[in-house]
Image (cartoon, rainbow, N blue to C red; front, side):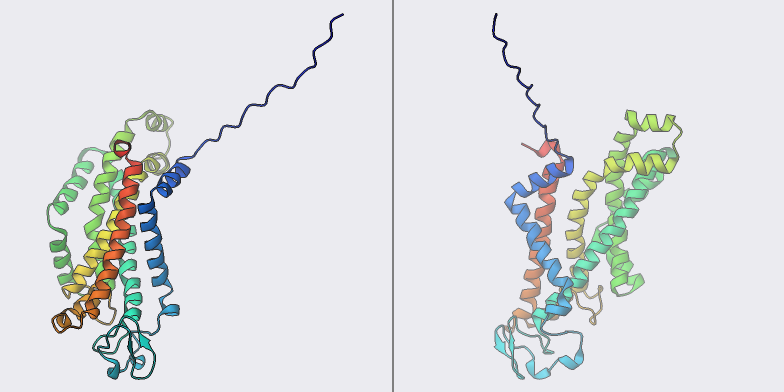
Length: 307
């Protein structure tokens, strides 16, 4: 009699973790310290702008809170009524730290708001042109080529000369400048996706036009738009500051970073550098941090740029 060998339980298969595209995007983004640092810096700047009414030492729009005796105090100087102005004051006695925090609210709000509206318009126009084809596609692309053929600052100046000054007017001008970039990007990707099997299958099944375009075609055209939108936010913030610096952007009663830089430009040669210097540094850090995020997103979402 031979001894029976004991039965052993079969080995359980190891679980295979499947990484979703979003998880892969987050992992690659976090691995880059420069891009992660840019995102953290911009998040802190945006959070400071949102909480400006709570953390700002002074309301720069409240005339009752301003004191002409505190005008042009250098950074770290003592106020006439007590307290310290860490970034100094302008000629009206406005605390520059408070003015920068409130100015960030307008600059970031205009940049993000105009980019979001232009993204929706450009996405719809690009999908419509690519899916419809024919004379509709040609008409949309001729409009895109016509707009992109002129310098953006020139178009913005013309529009604001017609519309006038104001935050809403600046947003309209920036939307009119940006939608063409999204329309061209979406159309290029949609033309490639439209010829694939899943789109042909959806059309053969008789699915409605809106469901094919927005349910199947649009999700596959969104990744490139993330990069373009990130870059355009920084571009819109810088362009708004340029328009306000030239005196055709937001009014003086609602100063943005560009308006703050313009207000202190005349005092640069007299040694009162802080009136323009600190808003300029804030604008530079904000734009650079957004561009760092956009550059790394482009590297992640574009396989040709990956090592």
